[in-house]
Amino acid sequence: MKNWLSMLFGVLGVGVMGTGHSAVQGPFLYQLQNADPAAIAASGFKVVVMDPTRHGDEASRYSRSEIVNLVQKGISPIAYFSIGEAEDYRGYWQKNWVSKAGSNLFTPQAPGWLGLTNPDWAGNYKVRYWESDWRYTVLEPELKKIIAQGFKGVYLDIVDAFEYWGDPNSYGHADDKEKRQLNDPLDRKESAKSMIDLIRWIADVGRELGGPDFMVVPQNAEYILAYDHRGVYMDAIAGIGVEDVWYDEEQKRSAQELGWRMPHLRQLVGAGKFVLSVDYVDNGDYDDPANRQRIHDYLEQCRREGFLGYVSPTDRELDEIHTIEKIQPR
Image 1: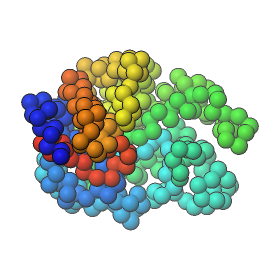
Image 2 (image 1 turned 90 degrees about the vertical axis):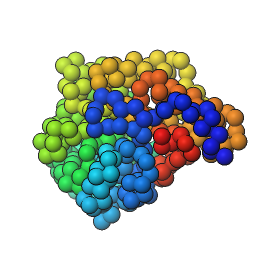
Image 3 (image 1 turned 135 degrees about the vertical axis):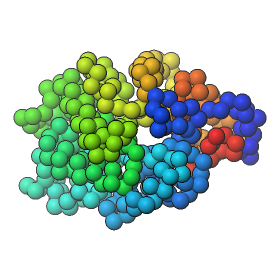
Image 4 (image 1 turned 30 degrees about the horizontal axis):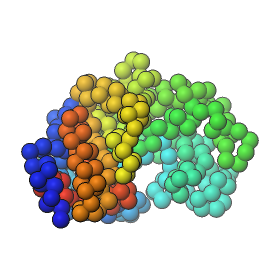
C-alpha cells in the first residue's frame, strides 16, 4: 500500500518548500484534465497548475467564483497557457483555416502566423509567435480572461518553439517543411529574442491587469537563459516549471543530461525564482521496490535542490489529483 512511503520520507518534508516568491508555497499539483476546483480546494495542495477550462473549449471555462474560492483557501491557481502552439479545440480556432481537420491543408482564410501541425500532438499547430496578430488577437484576449477568472498567474507552454523556428532544417519545399516568410527569424538567436520579448510583454500585461504579484511561469526551455543577455527574461518570470529532470518515466537521466539542465535551473533558484518540478515516475505498483526507490530518489533530489516536486503517474495524462499517503501532498 501507499503508506510504505511514510517510512521512507517521514522526515524529509519534500515538495513543501516555497522558493523565490512569497505567493507560492508547496505542495504543488499539476492537473490539466478533469480538474474539479472543489476537489482541489479540499486536497491539501497549495499551488495548482490547471487549464482555465474543463474541456478546453470556451463553454467550459471555470467561473470566477470557482477560482477565487481556491485563492480564499490559500491556494495559488496558475493557468495553463500555450503561447508557442495553437490548439484547434480552443475558442479562437476557426474551422475554415484548414480544409481538413488536423491537416496542413490551409485555406486562404488561415492567419499568417499559423504554422504546420505538431506531429506528436494531434490538433496542435506551430505558430509564428512574434506576429502581432497572434499576440493581440489570440493571446491578449485569453490572458485577460484568465486574469478575470481570478488566476494568480500563467503557466506558459511551448516556450521551446524558439528552437523550431530558429532551426534552418524546419524550412524547405517539402510538405512537412515551413515555407519561409519575410519576418521569420534567421537563426536561433533571433527566435530566442522574439520569445523573450513575448514573455516580457505577457508579464507586463499580466502585472498591469492582475497586480504586481501576477506570476509568469514558463515550462521547460530553461536554456533560453543563454540568450537573455540583458536579464529581460529573468526579470519577467516568477519561476519555472520543468518536466523529466531526473527521470524519463522509469528511465533515469544520464549525468550528461543533468549537466545540460541543472546549471540553468540552479541559476534560476539563485536568482530567487521558484521551480515547479514534475517527473512522471510512478508506475502505480507500490509493491515494486524499483518504483518505491524511484519515487524516493526523485523527491529527495527535489528537496536538495529546493524545487517543489510533484510525483506524477507514468501515463502522463495529468488527469487526476495524484496522492501518496502521508507523502503527497505533504
